[in-house]
Length: 164
Image (cartoon, helix red, strand yellow):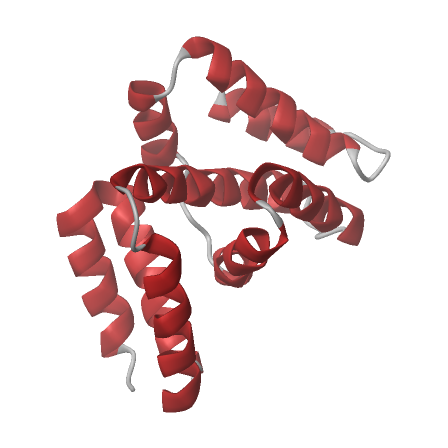
């Protein structure tokens, strides 16, 4: 497939879910470009099994993507990607969603880490749909990422401040 699938995915995602949908669509298009036809068919079967049930899972999936985008932003804030930070995010996701779902989320996370994504739209959407107490927990999660490599930099704190 060509790069067309990335932008097609972003357009469809934006129409269906706004800015976060566009990001999900773009990442999905990138993943589609990277996979062979057999890989794509396997992922499609897994996706259908996972999201076939209730609409609340889709909302949870949107929240997962938001967490991954914000986590990637904090991880990249100091200019280096530390394995301890990645491990912290993975362990938090395993604790929240289980190993299988966390592994699927990290397929998207790899694509998100390669992109420069504006967090403004993500933060605005979180602000609209998440209560204050949950947003505080989100900040705690982001500071946990910054602290996981045993050194919190001023750039990481500034990035979290912008997110807040």
